[in-house]
Length: 111
Length: 121
Image 1: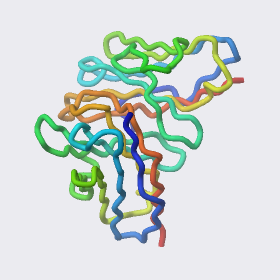
Image 2: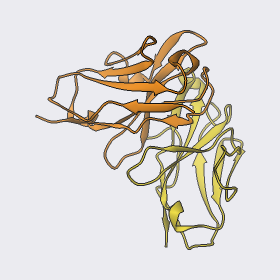
Image 3: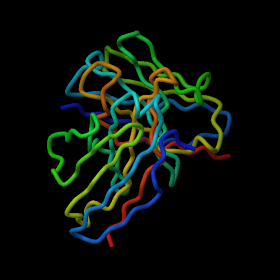
Image 4: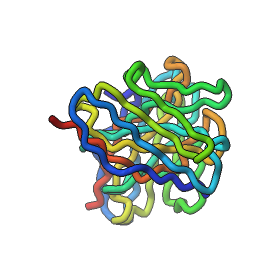
Protein backbone atom coordinates (compact mmCIF):
# COMPACT_ATOMS: atom_id res chain seq x y z
CA UNK A 1 0.00 0.00 0.00
CA UNK A 2 1.70 3.17 -1.20
CA UNK A 3 1.42 6.45 0.71
CA UNK A 4 0.71 8.29 -2.55
CA UNK A 5 -2.12 6.98 -4.71
CA UNK A 6 -1.88 6.71 -8.47
CA UNK A 7 -4.10 4.91 -10.98
CA UNK A 8 -2.42 1.63 -11.94
CA UNK A 9 -2.87 2.26 -15.65
CA UNK A 10 -3.53 4.93 -18.25
CA UNK A 11 -3.67 4.89 -22.00
CA UNK A 12 -3.94 7.11 -25.03
CA UNK A 13 -3.42 7.20 -28.75
CA UNK A 14 -0.56 9.03 -30.46
CA UNK A 15 -1.07 12.77 -30.41
CA UNK A 16 -3.52 12.67 -27.53
CA UNK A 17 -3.13 14.35 -24.17
CA UNK A 18 -3.17 12.17 -21.08
CA UNK A 19 -3.01 13.00 -17.42
CA UNK A 20 -1.87 10.91 -14.47
CA UNK A 21 -3.02 11.81 -10.98
CA UNK A 22 -1.25 11.45 -7.68
CA UNK A 23 -3.19 11.80 -4.45
CA UNK A 24 -1.62 12.30 -1.04
CA UNK A 25 -2.26 14.07 2.22
CA UNK A 26 -1.45 17.25 4.09
CA UNK A 27 1.79 15.77 5.42
CA UNK A 28 3.29 14.98 2.03
CA UNK A 29 1.91 16.63 -1.12
CA UNK A 30 0.11 19.25 0.95
CA UNK A 31 3.37 20.34 2.58
CA UNK A 32 6.11 19.54 0.10
CA UNK A 33 6.87 19.65 -3.59
CA UNK A 34 6.19 16.72 -5.91
CA UNK A 35 8.59 15.03 -8.27
CA UNK A 36 7.76 12.69 -11.13
CA UNK A 37 9.89 9.88 -12.49
CA UNK A 38 9.63 8.02 -15.78
CA UNK A 39 10.79 4.43 -16.00
CA UNK A 40 11.13 2.93 -19.44
CA UNK A 41 11.02 -0.87 -19.61
CA UNK A 42 14.18 -2.46 -18.25
CA UNK A 43 15.84 0.81 -17.28
CA UNK A 44 16.45 2.87 -14.17
CA UNK A 45 13.98 5.64 -13.30
CA UNK A 46 14.60 9.08 -14.77
CA UNK A 47 13.63 12.40 -13.19
CA UNK A 48 10.90 13.88 -15.36
CA UNK A 49 9.41 16.75 -13.33
CA UNK A 50 10.68 18.33 -10.11
CA UNK A 51 9.31 20.94 -7.72
CA UNK A 52 5.76 20.28 -8.97
CA UNK A 53 6.17 21.72 -12.45
CA UNK A 54 9.83 22.12 -13.39
CA UNK A 55 11.43 20.16 -16.20
CA UNK A 56 15.08 19.10 -16.03
CA UNK A 57 17.18 19.98 -19.02
CA UNK A 58 16.41 17.69 -21.94
CA UNK A 59 12.84 16.81 -20.95
CA UNK A 60 10.44 17.82 -23.74
CA UNK A 61 7.88 20.50 -22.94
CA UNK A 62 5.19 17.96 -23.81
CA UNK A 63 5.55 16.91 -20.19
CA UNK A 64 4.09 19.19 -17.53
CA UNK A 65 3.25 18.93 -13.87
CA UNK A 66 0.89 20.67 -11.51
CA UNK A 67 -0.15 20.54 -7.89
CA UNK A 68 -3.23 21.63 -6.02
CA UNK A 69 -3.75 21.01 -2.35
CA UNK A 70 -2.97 17.38 -1.61
CA UNK A 71 -3.00 16.20 -5.23
CA UNK A 72 -0.66 16.46 -8.17
CA UNK A 73 -0.92 15.66 -11.85
CA UNK A 74 1.39 14.83 -14.69
CA UNK A 75 0.21 15.75 -18.17
CA UNK A 76 1.66 14.46 -21.41
CA UNK A 77 0.54 16.18 -24.58
CA UNK A 78 1.21 15.05 -28.13
CA UNK A 79 1.55 11.48 -26.90
CA UNK A 80 4.27 9.46 -28.63
CA UNK A 81 4.97 5.74 -28.69
CA UNK A 82 8.22 6.26 -26.80
CA UNK A 83 6.24 7.68 -23.87
CA UNK A 84 5.05 4.17 -23.05
CA UNK A 85 6.53 3.67 -19.60
CA UNK A 86 5.80 3.56 -15.89
CA UNK A 87 5.38 6.90 -14.15
CA UNK A 88 5.88 7.50 -10.43
CA UNK A 89 5.13 10.50 -8.27
CA UNK A 90 7.19 11.15 -5.14
CA UNK A 91 7.25 13.59 -2.25
CA UNK A 92 8.69 14.00 1.20
CA UNK A 93 6.41 13.18 4.12
CA UNK A 94 6.58 15.33 7.25
CA UNK A 95 4.69 12.75 9.32
CA UNK A 96 7.50 10.31 8.56
CA UNK A 97 10.29 12.72 9.52
CA UNK A 98 10.86 13.81 5.94
CA UNK A 99 11.10 10.33 4.47
CA UNK A 100 10.62 10.00 0.73
CA UNK A 101 7.34 8.38 -0.35
CA UNK A 102 6.47 7.12 -3.80
CA UNK A 103 3.20 6.50 -5.54
CA UNK A 104 2.48 2.97 -6.67
CA UNK A 105 3.18 3.86 -10.27
CA UNK A 106 1.06 4.22 -13.39
CA UNK A 107 1.70 2.14 -16.48
CA UNK A 108 1.07 4.26 -19.54
CA UNK A 109 0.16 2.40 -22.71
CA UNK A 110 0.22 4.12 -26.09
CA UNK A 111 -2.43 2.42 -28.19
CA UNK B 1 27.65 15.18 -14.55
CA UNK B 2 27.21 12.55 -11.88
CA UNK B 3 27.74 8.92 -12.82
CA UNK B 4 26.75 6.07 -10.52
CA UNK B 5 28.01 2.56 -11.26
CA UNK B 6 26.72 -0.26 -9.11
CA UNK B 7 28.10 -3.70 -8.36
CA UNK B 8 26.87 -6.79 -10.13
CA UNK B 9 23.96 -9.12 -9.51
CA UNK B 10 23.91 -11.25 -6.38
CA UNK B 11 22.24 -14.50 -5.40
CA UNK B 12 21.83 -15.07 -1.69
CA UNK B 13 20.23 -17.65 0.55
CA UNK B 14 17.53 -16.71 3.05
CA UNK B 15 19.04 -15.38 6.25
CA UNK B 16 22.21 -14.15 4.58
CA UNK B 17 23.32 -10.56 4.03
CA UNK B 18 24.11 -8.67 0.85
CA UNK B 19 26.22 -5.57 0.32
CA UNK B 20 25.70 -3.51 -2.82
CA UNK B 21 28.17 -0.84 -3.86
CA UNK B 22 27.66 2.39 -5.82
CA UNK B 23 30.75 4.07 -7.24
CA UNK B 24 30.48 7.81 -7.86
CA UNK B 25 32.29 9.69 -10.58
CA UNK B 26 32.04 13.26 -11.79
CA UNK B 27 31.48 14.47 -8.24
CA UNK B 28 32.75 13.44 -4.83
CA UNK B 29 30.47 11.66 -2.38
CA UNK B 30 30.68 14.57 0.05
CA UNK B 31 29.05 16.78 -2.58
CA UNK B 32 26.05 14.47 -2.82
CA UNK B 33 23.26 12.95 -0.71
CA UNK B 34 23.01 9.28 -1.60
CA UNK B 35 19.70 7.46 -1.36
CA UNK B 36 18.76 3.84 -1.97
CA UNK B 37 15.54 2.71 -3.66
CA UNK B 38 14.47 -0.81 -4.47
CA UNK B 39 12.00 -2.36 -6.89
CA UNK B 40 10.66 -5.89 -6.51
CA UNK B 41 9.86 -7.75 -9.75
CA UNK B 42 6.80 -6.21 -11.37
CA UNK B 43 6.31 -3.80 -8.46
CA UNK B 44 6.81 -0.11 -7.80
CA UNK B 45 9.63 1.94 -6.35
CA UNK B 46 10.30 1.73 -2.61
CA UNK B 47 12.54 4.20 -0.80
CA UNK B 48 14.89 2.55 1.69
CA UNK B 49 16.82 5.46 3.10
CA UNK B 50 19.31 8.20 2.45
CA UNK B 51 22.01 10.44 3.87
CA UNK B 52 20.90 13.77 5.31
CA UNK B 53 23.96 16.06 5.27
CA UNK B 54 22.20 18.68 7.38
CA UNK B 55 22.06 16.29 10.32
CA UNK B 56 25.05 14.24 9.23
CA UNK B 57 22.93 11.13 9.68
CA UNK B 58 21.60 8.36 7.52
CA UNK B 59 17.83 8.09 7.66
CA UNK B 60 16.22 4.71 7.12
CA UNK B 61 12.66 3.90 6.16
CA UNK B 62 10.92 2.33 9.13
CA UNK B 63 10.32 -0.88 7.22
CA UNK B 64 14.06 -1.53 7.01
CA UNK B 65 15.16 -0.23 10.39
CA UNK B 66 17.47 -2.72 12.06
CA UNK B 67 18.14 -4.66 8.84
CA UNK B 68 19.75 -2.10 6.59
CA UNK B 69 23.01 -0.20 6.90
CA UNK B 70 24.08 2.49 4.46
CA UNK B 71 27.68 3.59 4.57
CA UNK B 72 30.06 5.69 2.54
CA UNK B 73 33.79 5.46 1.81
CA UNK B 74 34.78 8.99 0.88
CA UNK B 75 38.32 7.89 0.05
CA UNK B 76 36.98 5.92 -2.92
CA UNK B 77 33.71 7.84 -3.44
CA UNK B 78 31.78 4.63 -3.02
CA UNK B 79 28.48 4.21 -1.21
CA UNK B 80 27.30 0.90 0.18
CA UNK B 81 23.96 -0.58 1.15
CA UNK B 82 23.96 -3.72 3.26
CA UNK B 83 20.74 -5.62 3.92
CA UNK B 84 20.73 -8.46 6.41
CA UNK B 85 18.43 -11.34 7.34
CA UNK B 86 17.40 -11.65 3.74
CA UNK B 87 14.09 -13.24 2.84
CA UNK B 88 12.49 -14.05 -0.48
CA UNK B 89 10.54 -10.79 -0.41
CA UNK B 90 13.84 -8.91 -0.61
CA UNK B 91 14.36 -10.15 -4.16
CA UNK B 92 14.51 -6.88 -6.07
CA UNK B 93 16.57 -4.48 -8.10
CA UNK B 94 18.36 -2.08 -5.78
CA UNK B 95 19.21 1.42 -7.01
CA UNK B 96 21.43 4.13 -5.62
CA UNK B 97 20.25 7.62 -6.52
CA UNK B 98 21.21 11.19 -5.71
CA UNK B 99 20.61 14.82 -6.50
CA UNK B 100 23.66 16.60 -7.94
CA UNK B 101 24.19 18.39 -4.65
CA UNK B 102 24.28 17.85 -0.93
CA UNK B 103 20.94 18.32 0.78
CA UNK B 104 17.80 16.45 1.74
CA UNK B 105 14.97 18.15 -0.08
CA UNK B 106 16.23 17.70 -3.60
CA UNK B 107 14.87 15.32 -6.25
CA UNK B 108 16.84 12.28 -7.31
CA UNK B 109 18.36 13.39 -10.60
CA UNK B 110 20.91 10.62 -11.01
CA UNK B 111 20.44 6.87 -10.69
CA UNK B 112 22.71 3.88 -10.82
CA UNK B 113 21.98 1.11 -13.30
CA UNK B 114 20.53 -1.09 -10.58
CA UNK B 115 21.71 -4.30 -8.93
CA UNK B 116 19.51 -7.39 -8.96
CA UNK B 117 19.54 -9.25 -5.67
CA UNK B 118 17.89 -12.65 -5.75
CA UNK B 119 17.10 -14.42 -2.50
CA UNK B 120 16.52 -18.10 -3.01
CA UNK B 121 17.25 -21.33 -1.22
